[in-house]
Image (cartoon, rainbow, N blue to C red; front, side, top):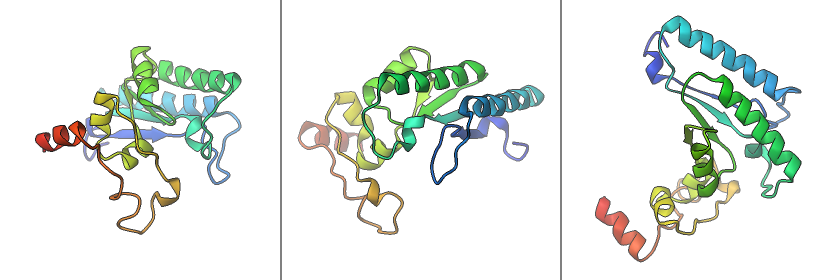
Length: 170
């Protein structure tokens, strides 16, 4: 922070992550402890960090797409409490769709929503969201591999009007 300024620093935390056996027995407590330190740092600096980016538990659900009511409530409880505690711009990511992302921002659960996997598989994601167009399905097996073609550059752009509109902007 001292080298580049708080306004150029964003922090990402994943208190509910269960990846590679890295998990905490109290994700909410862990998240709140980190947020308390970040809030104190911002007060000491007299400036806000650019953002706090929190990944939702569904980020690590290993392809699971359906959640029961209890899981959804636990996730909402965790994220809302972290959002409420943080004194700054709050970004979240995880299993968001266009609709869920818009709802999260509209309800005040987030200031920003990021779409990593959807962005990888949809090179024109912003346009697809704008047009409410169908999305390419991602192939998780091709994420973060050494192949320079498969997985990053081979996902198709929209055809028809979407392509014309996209090319007109480039």
